Each structure stands twice: as structure tokens, then as C-alpha cells.
Image (cartoon, rainbow, N blue to C red; front, side, top):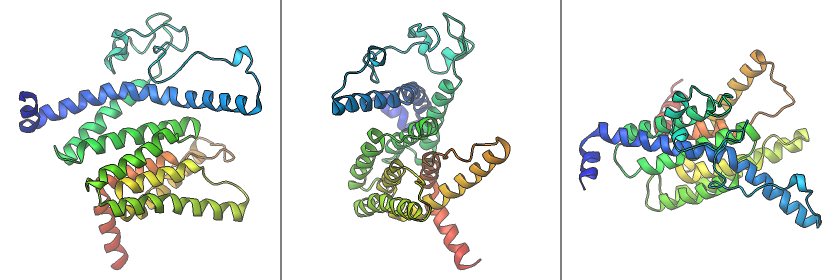
Length: 292
């Protein structure tokens, strides 16, 4: 009871709790980002083997892997990470970014993801306060963070996340957390249908696939959480962001133009911005359109 009273009466304590929670969850998000694509690959390979009625060679068989087991290890020497070495951000700093066993470098991505997870939680706590939206918004944002990194790495948007959080968004909006349930349902349908239509038209005109089905599901998920009214802002913001970053990459980093750019991170960023300031963005755009 005293803990709840502190959260309600002390904003600093509330933000501190959110920050610590974000760091702890960020460590788990790193596991999801690393292992979920691998789990999907193993599942696909096993399914193909069963369908083709073949036996996998011994070198293709792997140990059991999920989000819990095996314990995290150094990718260089297979040293099992101890509890002391797994403290978010702090362990990375104490170890000076190196494995305690082989002294090979640890990717800086791990503390960056943990820091981003904490920063997101604190920012949403400041924005929403201690209200019904804050914790659903934090869960939603963590899902978008994971989807963005996985899509950037593998050009995959796992159904385990997009479909699960589509239904989660519909559930929360039964109670009107972000929008009414009708706007949520229409948003899910319209989100999928809009990008599916773009995909079909682009393929018809060019003979190429311009995006993946995961992008359709991600926009459906965003529509389920935020409602159909926010879809135009999400599409405009994501297209603008994707165009700018794509052009910059091609000019300054000589990005291979034959390699498709993942669209999921831009949709995720646009959806997150719209969740926070979508109403203001739509109002400003409407005023500009009516009085340019």
C-alpha cells in the first residue's frame, strides 16, 4: 500500500520505477530480438523436413532454444553469462564492453536497447501520467521496438508479435483506452487492406513485390491500437521518414539499391509518434490544408 501511495504522490519515484522496469524488460527484449528469428528459422526448417518427409543432417540439428533456455552465452567463446554479468547497462560498463572470459567485445546494441526501453517507459510516464493509458502504451512501445530491430536485421515482422498485439489492442479498446472499439476494428481491417492494395497494385505495375505481408499486419496492429482515424498520419509519416532515410543511405553510404529497405521500422516510429501526438499532427495538417 505504501508503495502505491509513493507512486501516486511522488512523480520522481514513479518515473524511477518505470526506468528500472524498462531496464529489466530491455534485457529481456534483447533476448527476444536475438532468439525469435532463430526460433522461427528452426521451426520453418522442421516443417519443411516433415512436409518433404526427409531427415535433417546431424550438422543441421540444434539444441532446444526458446526465450528461456539455454542461458545467454558469449557468441565468441560460449561462456555462460552469470547473474552479475547480466545487470542491464551496469554490467556492460563494469566489464568495459568485453566478455569476462575471452575479452572479446560485446555488442553495444545490448545496453542501447536496454536504455531505449527505459527511456520509452519514462517518457510515456511523463506524457500519460499515472492513468489507464500508460502501461498499455509502454507494452505497445516495447513491441514496436522489438519489431523494428528484428525487421532491420532480418526483414521479418514475426506474427507472434504483430498478431498477438493486434488482438491486445482490440482488447484494450473494448474499454476505450485509446479509441472506441469500432474505430479499433475498422483500423485493423483498413490497416491491413490499405497496404495489401498498395502491394497488389505495385506488383501489377512493376512485376515486383514492394513490401512483405508483415508490413500489412503491422499497420493492422497500429490501426487496432490507435483507430482508423490515425492511419493517414501513420502512412504519411512513415513514407516521409522512409524516403528521407532511404535517400540519405543511398547517397552517403552507397546503399545497394537492389536490396529492399525494411519498411517496418518506419511504420513503427510513425505509429509511436502518432500515439503521442497524432491528434495535434492531424489538426495541424487539416489547418494547413484548409488555409495553406
